[in-house]
Image 1 (cartoon, rainbow, N blue to C red):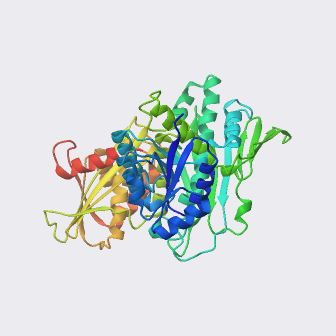
Image 2: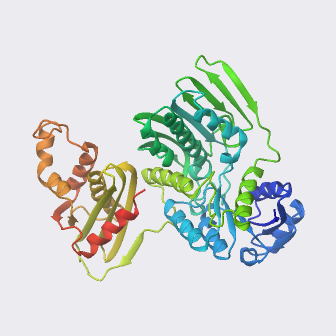
Image 3: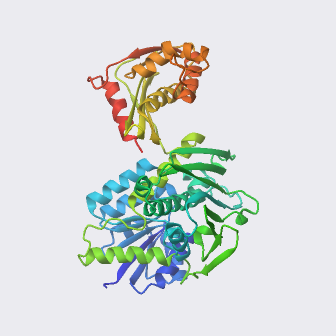
Length: 517
């Protein structure tokens, strides 16, 4: 196999760990480093015995002899640097998270496909032997049917001004920095458990093998002084062939003795799997249903744990160069879809918390038509499968500006998405400081929502949220929220025909379809 030249962007601690792993890999020919200054790059090169130092990222990205670029900068730079690297013909291994949100990652996937360049998120856990042993035990049914998951990753990181884990401008917070690990572990376990269920004749398990996404997400968060999540806990509910499996997860960056909160438990009908420091585990334990340990296997790292993902990248690139897999742009172990799936879950959590980073700009544009003192809203919802992947979109015209909003859910219905579109649009009025006395006209192509909020809802409430047929009202949780918002503002509800050429209805339709997760 022809040896591969690596380049590292960013000269922090994690870059040093990667340089050490690369130096122990016989398939790596040379390694270069790029930092913000040549002095810093040279210092790194001397410490880690790297062959070449660049004083700018651009120099490394355009260097003709670099095959793979490892990106070890703060999260906010990942999408820009990954795309630049691929457009310069480089393969990319990018530190987790691959980028801050699912929307940005779709841009990375697009460029990877266009350029034919390999891209992989550096989710090192999925390549560790101990973690893979745990997943194999789940898939082989060693613990029977998976029932629940417990995983935590917390630490006590002292606050330092400008620190990437605390600064909102750098996409700080516990979720993206360490919370991504328990979520990834849960998703991996669900896929393996679904595979076992399929082997046991449960045909519906195929759905969670192909797309192991939760259909219900609940969470709590403690926001810190810098405006990011310092601690969070979440409950993700997955459906494996009609049976709910719940993952209880948490992450934190200011937790005293947080180092004790880094274990994972996979609990089944016939046993339990446990790993300390699950994100970098070097051993794994298997217990039977009587809590008796029946296996305890150690897998010491060959170097420092980074070597396993390096081997995967090298193998994929070698196959590509040899013509054995010329179209290889992703890893079979950690695919683009895997990264997108987890980012979508993280997006949902942050949306629930109202955590939006300053650089995640909402689409605001000048509008051609002045609505004067009035506020005009258009909304729409979409769903593939019904139930299935859903999305909603809204356009607000107010104060001489156009504001576009969108969002989605993993398992929902079209009616719920129509309701969500109206709810989130009206919630946005408070953020825009829209006075409740202002005239608001909301255009919607859903007769279900329009008639429900203007006519049916009063009867439902009088009947204890029962329909005329004495059946429970569907989507009561959303109707209650919409009713409160409708009372707060002076809303005129107007029905507009969908797909009939109305400019803003068409925009909402596109927003909703693009937001389907």
